[in-house]
Length: 124
Image (cartoon, rainbow, N blue to C red):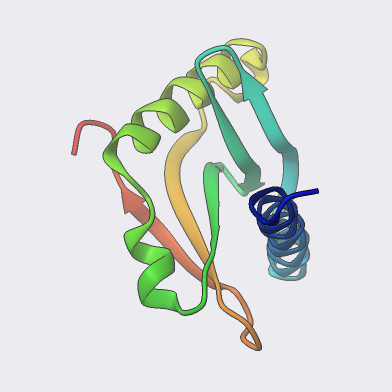
């Protein structure tokens, strides 16, 4: 196995661990996780969670520090996440009246995840 493959696998494992940490953080704060690693032909969402009437599409970013994590969410990714959320909602007519929100959770080593609610809006 070459060095690049090992680094990629290690990054994948860190990402999965960060998602699990964020999932538990959300649950402890009263969110109900509706989907994890939701994949569609138009995009993917790390976590979809509900709290009250609000549905949050949550992108998890794990980096060496919060600043790098925050910078790593690109415009192109935002569009894919929004399209994936539309796809999810089409399969869940029971959520038609829910308020939608796009969040980011930043994970840095040795820290509890930082939850940025309403990190962006569609069309921004």
